[in-house]
Image (tube, rainbow, N blue to C red; front, side):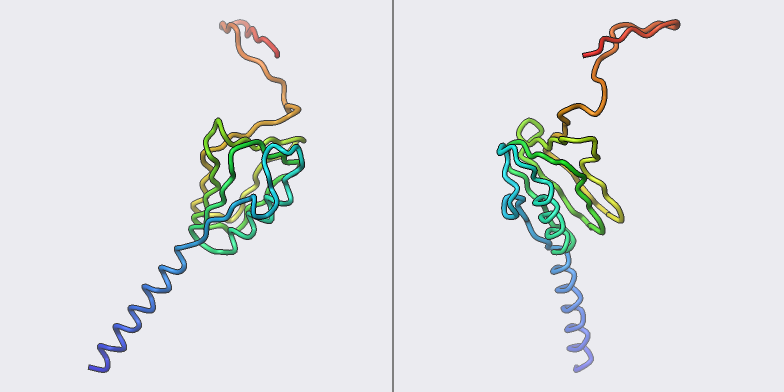
Length: 144
């Protein structure tokens, strides 16, 4: 009888521990000072928000509101598990690189998801254009 009770308690403890570990937390970048459309560099505030969300454990979600966020350096994402970075839609949330940077650099992560946002640069770190015509002997491009 006592052995069954101990077994049930251990099983309950394992299930409880797994549930806590999987919950994570929803974190808004605005809670850390990153506000859209203010033309102020949001990099350090977004980095603080990323680090905080990851510290809550597996299943955390980092939320960006609608608007444009300015970034002057790379956001580091390390040791994240089942971590989601969520915008409000590809036509609603824009992360704008203002220098020649990687927007995100992720290492030692599992289940990292970036969704519902767009990434762009101003100025462009590359030459923009499109192919007008291509044959076996030449490529005609128009540079913008």
